[in-house]
Length: 199
Image (cartoon, rainbow, N blue to C red; front, side, top):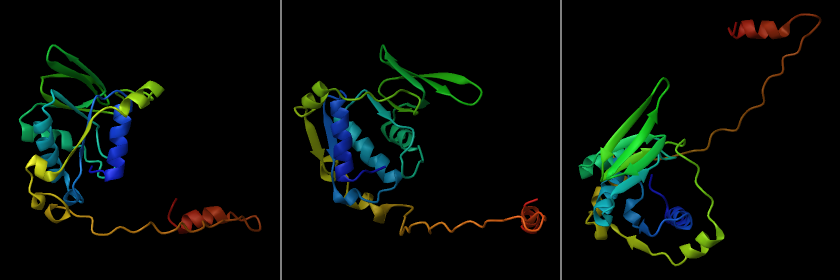
């Protein structure tokens, strides 16, 4: 998911307050409307420039809910992708997750550098302390553009997207339901269900 400048700035601010040591904000109007392919390319280039050992992602965005970005970024970087972790630990240059499904749990391990995605069961975000809030104001936040990442603006954005949301409209207002009352000892409700072929 690509966030608007204000939403992204708020997310970076919260991360700094909760303990992150620095932030990177990619700001470029040309990114607006990017699909998963363009987003993964953008993130891969940013990761190359930032040179982390471990990238942690959520399990899905709140817009498309696809959950494919971690694997796509890992493919572009040539890194292992360890996805949908309910737990996460890092020891001796390796990352380990536990992935839970309906009938079993699997333990998956990979060497760093790696891309990891975690589920909503991986832990609760801690609330920032007053000390953390004050310390966050002194932490560095870099702002990068597409030019900084060496990405041509024609490769991202709505015009480059393979799928596009061209228009949205609000849902129609709910209509009042029908009240079925019993009349003269007859079961109007049963008649209603029968007529509608609900029973």
